[in-house]
Image (cartoon, rainbow, N blue to C red):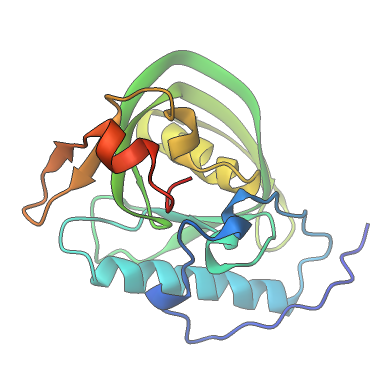
Length: 202
């Protein structure tokens, strides 16, 4: 079905265009893209620009991926960095209408952060292997198997398209929440004091 909605984008998007909790749009499901237009491609460029600008402002973090909802566009698009280990490589791969076709491997806990959850990290259980299907920016089908950190990224970002934030997976685990310090180290949070009754997070 064709997507009749018209989108307007600002090609100079920065980190300030990234929405954060408690913005309620982060809890909403995104809509599928019907037709991949030039406006959709402009949105993709906006997403990449906002991610890189956010990264440039963070000494100890890398912007590895972004979902369109994070720049307040409820559309099922995700961009993922091609190289997580080299900040000089600013290229991305685009996934339109991404879905996880199959979860495989084991559930494994590891740290996750989010551009839309300021300074909070969590030890989140994710599957170590997933099969993903999507479209690229030209509408061609993509099918891939992701393992390890990349599998975690896809689960995190596809959650965003479904209105789920990583903290939702660990809300009942008092020992899972951490804050990133100025020195780049993760420090455990006091769950009752800093998390449970935090009106920003919930």
